Image 1: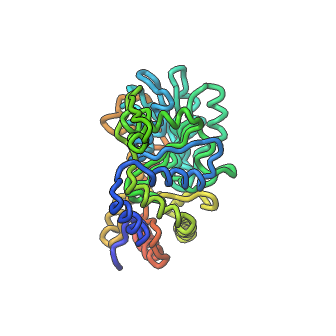
Image 2 (image 1 turned 120 degrees about the horizontal axis):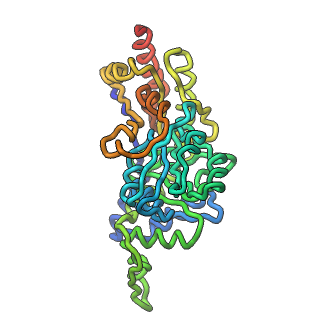
Image 3 (image 1 turned 180 degrees about the vertical axis):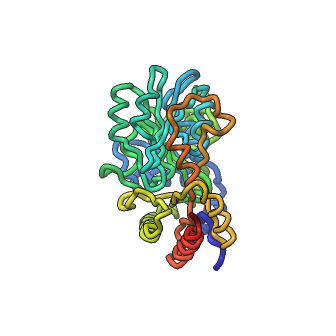
Length: 377
């Protein structure tokens, strides 16, 4: 059996031709392809009275979302500790304080009941992370938001293309961020996007993604009447490039087939692994969600040895994620009861999931997991 990676981008000739076209045209930075990609994303997500801004990475999208939420020094932002470390780092970069919350054991999304115990007058935002095939409980989160007056930032890096409460992801939080890195559901090689609820916030995002310019340099360059340059606020160099956007345009054209294939692969994994008592499969049925990863849980005593065994069989696996509160950078941060996070983080294994994965490869993976576990007590 050939090597089976944990993930792999679905790149075909259309993406290559799209990138080549931009390279031949010569305008490589922020430009018309980014605008086209933003419009296509808005249409696909069925955004109603919401606006989208594309940026250089999902991590930049997280940081910029905190700027839009007006997070400042001394504020507290609650987030799950079972998380990519970019969330907590972005909070620190704003001078604010991460507060780590536990996750629900079924969904691995933020535990709303435990969240209640962490809210105080300093709480200005909650970053809710959609984990794999599950989406956080935004109905309950919105009830808490109305009571305590904080912003909800939806980290939808795992849930692009999913539906919640009959709405496309991107339509029910104060701010939503997406990631389009090399192994996400769709890729722009590197890239991200932020969805906001007002044109004012959109203009602010467009300004800070390009060093604070009130008029984007590509727009000013083509303005024959007047060269309009002014900078009113701090900014970054976090724009998406035309090259990345061109690849994104080719990717979004095949989003339906990507979603269908990944959902079917996850359903098949669930079917296979339900046959093994020592494996816990995701709670999701994958009817309305599009997963970025597929995970299983096994007892802590098996986990690392199983990963090593699979590696010897040319099956690569991953870990999503190491708890943030155990990292040196965040050890002094405030936290609640993290008993579920501590438990599940030692049990999780991310199995291969990508568009070109075949069912016979899934069976190969399943058989080796089963063979390993049947000899374990």
